[in-house]
Structure formats: C-alpha cells, structure tokens
Image 1 (cartoon, rainbow, N blue to C red):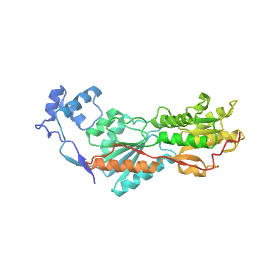
Image 2: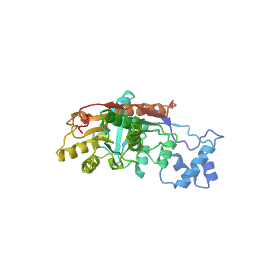
Image 3: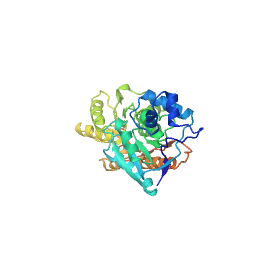
Length: 345
C-alpha cells in the first residue's frame, strides 16, 4: 500500500499556521480554505488561486498521513481500437508488480476531463493518475496536487504544463524516417495525411515529413499536404481527392495506422493496388498493421513501454521519490513491410 500526505486542518510547517489564520489573511471563510486544501471543486478560480498562493507563501504543509487505495487511475481520450489496449498492457505490467489495480476513464473523444472527474478521483484516493493523449486542466491539476495525487502524461497533446511529468515518443524522428524511406525508394510525389495539427504529435510528425523533403531537395507541393485528425475517414476522404489530382502522388505518409487503413480503402475503390500504384506508410505499428493486406510499413511507437515507464514514474512520485527526468521521450522505429516499393512511374 502506498501512502501519501492527506488533510490536517491544524498542522503546518511554518510556525503552526492554521486554516483559520490563512482564511483571515485571504479574507475568506475557514470552510473555503478547507475546501481548497482538500481539493474540492466548488471554489471560484480567483479565490482558489489566492488561497493556494497564501498556503505556499506561509509554508502550510499537511502532516497527517492517509492510506491510499491500491489503484492507478488511467484516463483515455477514447476507449476504442488497439491503441488503449497497448497502453493498458504497459500500465498493468508495472502496476501488478506493486500490487496495484487500474481504473479506466474514457473521455469520449475529449482531451480534458469534465468537472466531476476530479471529485471522483479524490473520492477513490488512487496513488496517482496516468493521463493518455489527454490531461487535466491546470485547475484540475492544482486540485490533484493539493491532495498529493501525482499525474503523469502519456503521449501528451501539447507541451506539458510546468512540472507535469510526461512520456512521449520521438514523433519528429518518426515522420522523418517514414518520409526518408519513401525518398530512398525513389518517390518524389509524396503526400501526407497529417494527424490533428492542434496536437503536439500531429505537428511533430508533419515537421519530420517536411524536414526529410527539404533535406532531399524535394519541394513540398501544398496540394499533397492534407490535414487529418487521426481518424480512418481522414485517410479515405483525402486519398480519394489525392488520386483525382492531375499529377497524383506515388506515396502517402499518414498520421497513424488508422488513417493508413482509410488510404487502403480509397485505393481499393479506385481499382488501384498497394504498393504498385501507391506506397503507404503508417504510424504506431499497432498489432493489426501486420495483418493488413498488404502488410503495412509503419513507424513503431512503443506505446506499451511508454505506459510502463509512466506508471513506474507515478509509483516513484507516490512513494515520495524525485524523478531524475520529468520528461521522457522514447525512440520510434521504421518497420518495413509490403506496403512500400519503388514508384512505377
């Protein structure tokens, strides 16, 4: 069982400062300060910021220990497909080593939890939260921190807030390797169906594509750059349009394996073949990639290892440890299969 500090309304590290004294300094009720200390949601944002600032300034520290539930909260933007299975496998492997179970929350496509989520987490008293392709808002993070519930992000959607530990993959290098592979095969008309460009991974993979094209001295045709959102339908719709161009691409780099599946469907509809008429590279290397026909060349993102690393970091934090590196970036790898070949024309 992992223990961490819990609420104690009358103890502090600086001259025995109390909640009542903090309340007097802030000009609010002691009940309001207590709600902030205990991470409750029903406090106005400006009041919460004022009280938390005074708590830090006055050195207020909760000394009493409370027992945590042997539980790791895992939050996904969406519980669908093979992606979350890979992550769950990694979390379970490390959690099991420490006698912990996991609780899953799906956000139905959103990337930040709703208001009631934090209250549920604080009620369950887990050792910490692993947030996957999602993350708490700054206010929610402050609530969790106030109750000593650590958070680690996996595949963060953007630059993590200051001090929030994270584990991600080398997305830029993956985009570079995918495009360089096609260039080395002789392709020059290389299209890209991006992931969501509002997300860090989507932007980084596109930047890697551009860097490879630039290094090879091949101009990027704007008609070949299509913005997607990591959905199968993106590959389908954009490839239909790409194949109708007067000078269509001979190869496509996609934001993930799902978009690559959409590309396969569009090529089939057009009566064409992969890789004879169009080479395709995905990203993720989820288990279904090897069973696509033809088997998909893709960039392996080590989701299982990313999740395991994040869970180990979380356990260290819950046990009072200090992380040597708060941001871990794991390598990606090009996996060449049958969906890429030299261009026919």
